[in-house]
Amino acid sequence: MNQAFSLFDIIILIGIVQGLITSLLSLLKKTHQSNIYLALAIVAFCLLSSKILLHTLGLWNTHVFRYFPLAVDLVIQPLIYFYAILLIEPKAKINRWAILHFLPFILSETYSLIVYFNVLAVTDPAAKDAIAQSFHFDKVKFIEDYLTLISAFAYLTVGLFKLRKYKRWLGRNTSDSSYPTFNWLRNILLQLLVVSVLSLVNIFLDRIFSFESSSFLRWQLFYIIVAIHIYYLGFVGYQKSDYAPQKTSKTLTKTKQLSQQQIEKIKKKIEVALEKDREYLKPELSAAELAHNIGASQSDLSYVINSCYRKNFRELINQYRIEEVKSKLVDPLYNHLSVLGIAYEAGFNSEASFYRIFKKVTGKSPTGYRKDHLKKP
Image 1 (cartoon, rainbow, N blue to C red):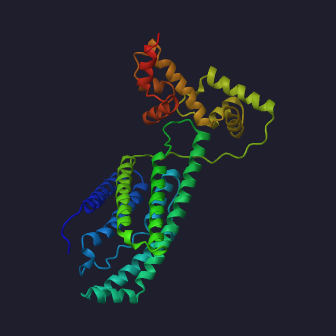
Image 2 (image 1 turned 90 degrees about the horizontal axis):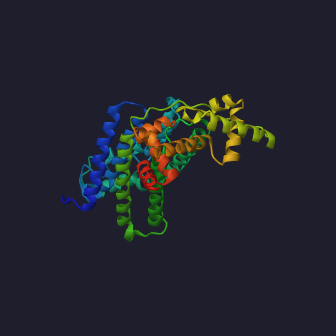
Image 3 (image 1 turned 90 degrees about the vertical axis):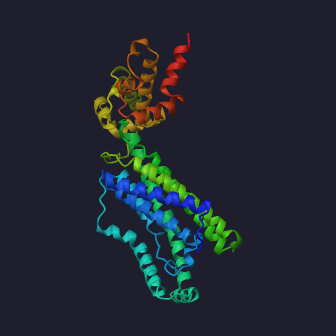
């Protein structure tokens, strides 16, 4: 057995330890049931990473660890999927039929346990291999690899679709900046997609094109990327584990076709509501509330905003709020207020969202904007 730890082994071990710690911390918070799925997904990633250590540390050649049952490949995708769904759709309930999502993993792990306990009593590595092959071990693992990839692309596609649907709902329905945009969740799903693509490339190079000379190096690179993903998933997941999900409403029905005269009439009412009545100062202003105030349907309001302003409801309200903040930042009358105080007065109710939106719109931080404009004569 090789006792020496290489740099690669240390990187993987750091990722595993960090993942186990953050998964435990996320579970202890108990703020939302999505944390359970996140913690289990991180643990599954840690077990996946430990598979390469069986080979690099020489454990695969020992009696106990040869064919050790670590068939976790098929459990990561549904865990991440349910984690995402419970964040995006707070009212979603995971019923007993959800176990069907984990059936491939259960079958895979059961098979691995059967093989492991059948070879455990045998000490000779060659004899162990012979027993494992009598269970068609290589063929089954070949099928598992492709099922894992199919599962990954399927779950990630559905997850990204639901996230996009939520963002559309958010943009059309509310200006409340306390609602999350879930950019970090999108990053997690996209990173998983990258990991899946890399796995697919390695499998094709190994089994279709027989590039075996570079196989171990490529898989080492793959597991380093997995370790990085574990770190990101654990760090962001723990950081966001206090998130309290908001209630969402039904999506809008499709608007009827409006005439140009009707569009102009609704547009003028929107301008009066925002420029004269300054409705945007209400932190939790919703599209339904604004539509009611101007005497229009919510679907018609959304249609006019999209067609006339080339924005959704949320973007339009935030545009007015940012202009309010910009004017007060350079007005001496508001020097007694902090930047955040000005932001709250303008209708923002989330510090993180305000700074992100301000930087996106102006290209500068609020402090930098104030400093630059106060210098001008």
